Length: 463
Image (tube, rainbow, N blue to C red):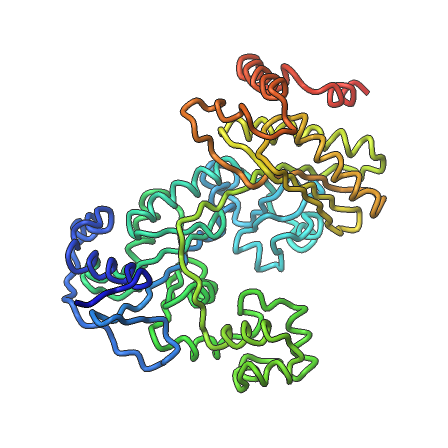
């Protein structure tokens, strides 16, 4: 009797799904049946590269099929969709704030990028590069909505979808060859792009290969509005055609360290094994192994069901730099009030509070604290946020151009009652805190958000 351990059980399941219940993958099967494909089944290609991401357990060889779908200029596309007569008619478009704002570029149209405008660039500098560009605020609520819509559509095509960011999603199509009549992965990617474009009007670029690293690098070359699939066995050749800067997480500082040791190109690094890289490049054992895997296209990370939005952020860029602690704290109070209300409105709790400051010279600093138990009330969140702000201001007391708060470690309620989970939460929170929060939310829900505000905010507005 053959005994298979738990480590190979997922592989058996994949084989069973592909060969026994081909019609059970409802979303993808329905899509294929709607648009039949003439391709006939063909055996998987034999892998010539021993480092390819495949595995075998005596039944069949399973090659990983990973896609990364990336929405093209997502914030720009959404801004144009909700304002077709304004932003929709502007080829030169910057999303991030008004022309007079002191914020930074969140995204820019491809036409605007041709002028050198990039994300995270101050809007004032972007306008110097592209004076005729139209500037609009980030339509965040609509972006979150559209992102969720795209993710739901992607679930029609793949059994596992992982959100990498608000506009990027990994799809694991391993074992679905039979569902798609063994068509090329590029053809499946085109199906996905067509389905999303038809349903939302938004375009995707898709990169693919046998692992997440290759898919990530491929989609960067496929953009905008394209598909690039690296065939199994072609991982090394593909990475060798790239620059070090194109490899994710090999940033400017790491490149400078490598260049100082004579490692300037991918080809320079490719020549050495990890032990030699460690000596030649002055790297730690972990860094050398990681870099070797990168330049050889090796990545064993799996695709997992994971929601991308595990945090809730609110921030404000000031029209003029704020110098006084009192003024910065008042803005922080305003942001905490909004964030905590939105947290409860979504039926969530938070365990981690982060405060972010951007100083007059664009230096960004942050401090965070994780609590033993989840919280929901304004009072507790504000107390922690104030303490973090004091820490940041003591370290560097200079004019501030931005303050922000982020609530993370979010969790959904387990009980049916949206507010039942408030009871017995953190020892820092009393029953009175939670009851007061609920009462305030009810008043605001009936009379508007400005019907009841903290005293610090009201006093500031009266000045």
